Length: 336
Ligand SMILES: Nc1ncnc2c1ncn2[C@@H]1O[C@H](COP(=O)(O)OP(=O)(O)OP(=O)(O)O)[C@@H](O)[C@H]1O
Ligand SMILES: [Mg+2]
Image (cartoon, rainbow, N blue to C red; front, side):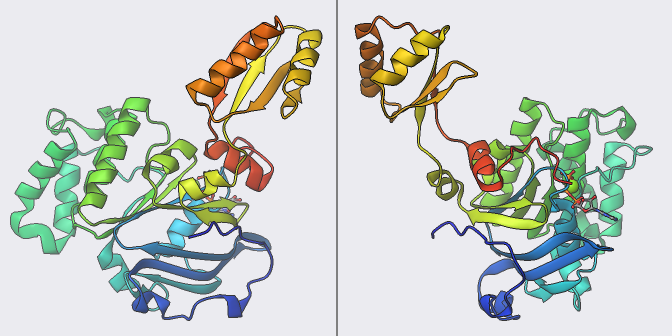
């Protein structure tokens, strides 16, 4: 599938699939022409999404892009102003109960009750989830083990670290064995090790056939986990595709050479005519496939001209480059 770069503008009704497309395909989630505004501020502007069952779909965007608003509409917590949303084949506007029965949601802010222990939090979910109550104790024990929370199971959740709280929160979401799970920034604020633990939990769920709808601000996370991703910027989808498809849109791998003087930068720019220069950083960006052969040739050429590069890095395009190219700003810019 080719990358679709979405052109912003009014919803074109004719461009969208029919309302009941969610029933016809193996879509776990089908969103068409979704709009939401708070007073006169448009927060979601004509969003179309399609998430195949048993895959990870990642919605990527900076603060304020509209990720949580999207999750809230898809999980029936918020009413849309326009468009259709089908989750597990059910319309969120008219069949909210059926949608809720099919999904699990781990919100951006943990829903853990601080006054209860980890075990009690899980037991509470089991009790609320009537279908699971027959072997409730077993479910709690399994989840505590699976999430490595056995040792702290009897401690108050208020004593848990951020990572433990996130894990408990996700464990609570899994009590009813949902087939579609929404995770809103599940790894924000986690240290690298806890992030990796969360990633492996997500991969295990997908291996079991669960569909994951994941929002994140981390481009590497979407790159690692997602089968498909969509980039949201100020309420508009600016691109959709696989991580590789989006990366292919970008200028390729290059070598960045940093020099100490303008004279050296000038000389290097002359011997690498395809390069682009960054005068402020005294750096030169030379296109390269990043392979050892071409890197050796590049260094030999510098030697030949007695040029010494102070810094030498091989740069493979990542999703940060994609974001910058699609939106004109990096993910650090707050899109308000
Ligand atoms: N209840 C509300 N009333 C008014 N505006 C709101 C409300 N909720 C969200 N917004 C606005 O909608 C926009 C999108 O917010 P949203 O929470 O969906 O962003 P986000 O992508 O989840 O951001 P973050 O990464 O910070 O969680 C923001 O401009 C926000 O200020
Ligand atoms: Mg959010």
